[in-house]
Length: 222
Image (cartoon, rainbow, N blue to C red; front, side, top):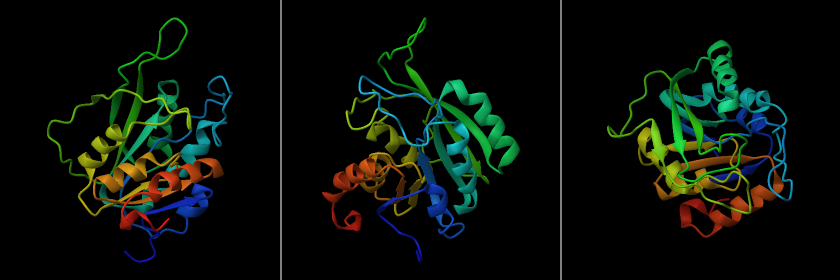
């Protein structure tokens, strides 16, 4: 796999990093980008870099299409608030085909006026005609959410593993252009895949690298 920074956390702007990766070199993309809500989170008013507008993340996602091999899948977490906008963006401005909107049931209530929130969306986008590995996979996935003080939107490793298993083989290269604290990279490694993780926030880069530094040899090149 020449010219690929395998098993590395790259701290930098995703659009710039992606422009340097070779076309048709990625087997799967799993990512949880900033939703573009332009809000702060929690009692400490944590702000996510790039969360000012949904187009900031979507512009990066549009660049990722040519990096995927033929017949590959992208999984992108998405807010229900922006779902119609996101679907229209991919249909009008990219070559991705939207295969499914998966509902992640967090199995615990969150805050919210009138109706408390208990789920998020995961968009399954296709390049070509991917093959899916788990015939029992549902479009409703129930995995209990985690609470991690290091990041307001940390995802469970178990959830990411389900997506990776469904759409890649061992030895595949999994890309996450919005790595956060490293969950996708950790899940990919534990599933026997390579990873490339990109994160703009220096603090989250340090956390991701620390989580991955204790892994066996293949993931030590960070």
